[in-house]
Amino acid sequence: MAGRTGLVVAGAGARGAYEAGALTELLPRLTRTWSAPSVLVGTSAGALNVAALAGLAGTPPDDAATELVARWESVRTGEVVALPSSALEATAAYAGDLLGVPSALRRALGLPDRVTRLLDADRLLPVVERVVDWDRLHHAIGRGLVDAVGVACTDAGTGGTVVFVEHGADVALPPYDPGRDIRYVGTRLGPEYLLASAAVPVLFAPRRIDGPGAGWYVDGGVRLNTPLKPALRLGADRIGVVATTPATPSPGNEPPPDRVPDVYAVAALALRIVLGAGVTEDLRTLRAVNTGIDRGADTRHSRIGTWFAGPPPERATELAELAAEIRRREYGGLRALRNPSLLVLERLVGGAVPDTDLTHGAELLSFLFFDPAFATAAADLGAAHAALSTAPDSAHPDSEHPGTGRRRARAARR
Image (tube, rainbow, N blue to C red):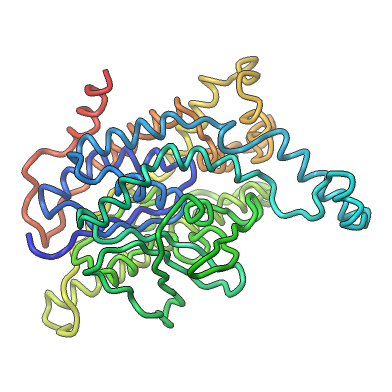
């Protein structure tokens, strides 16, 4: 099929394992129905996923997605979040602020001079280097196996989105987009760009990027969690989209809580908005344009096929419920001592207070639960949800019944 297929993967934190599982279903079907994705754009954990897939270019899609899941299963909590040491360091910095201790004295005592983050993102560097084969990524773009890889970050100075792009010679770098405040910067991608895209404000310190687009950056999901438009501007004619929130909102039928929502509930709400609104609005806009084209009311645009893989609206809470289940099963009681980082992390997100609603704590935990057992279960759930997706009406019917990709992946690992 002529033209380019794009793949857009949203930010998700530890839920990136769910996205990898969804790709075991979506990636082979995209390749068979359209073509192998050659324009890959992601934010945060989504950027990690697309960079890893670019480094697997040329590998059969089933095998590439299976390998991506295996790499997520190799990541452990202590490799990502240094707790309790990070918590102690942040507490010392905050105490210094409260007491008005001069920065020079703090540095002389070996203490942090400011509160810049709660967790230490530097520990992520070996993970990023292990999950992504950077030499193969550069080689794939140089040979034309991949047309472009984009990583979305938020400029900590301006608040705008910067998409760092490594691209082939036949891909034009888009101009500045004033409507969405998106700037495109051509570069040779490396681990520092993924760390910047994943620098969740407050949790992680802003990351410095030197060279083209030099500046301080935070998580790209602050402004552009699901970067559909950059994929289109980079030349994609049809797009596969992977996210951990539904493509359409579900009506709120739950009764109001008895008590005022606590900080964990509000934080969970903020994450749902940041990670969900972009998916819903962008897909809704694309589908509205397609409808106008079908009716003959829109002659200015071309139809863009979109293929979404993620949770159905009625199953939106399953991933958080899964995180709580894995936590109880693998680290309940004294077993929690096997993973002290997780033990402290759970308390930070409100998941260990016995007389409160643990729903919101479980939802926050699912974004930070870097653990092999959770990764495996989340990948299976992502595959199950993706198997429910159907080929868009602008594409030919899928040649294989959905639901087989993740089963093949499990069989291959066995």
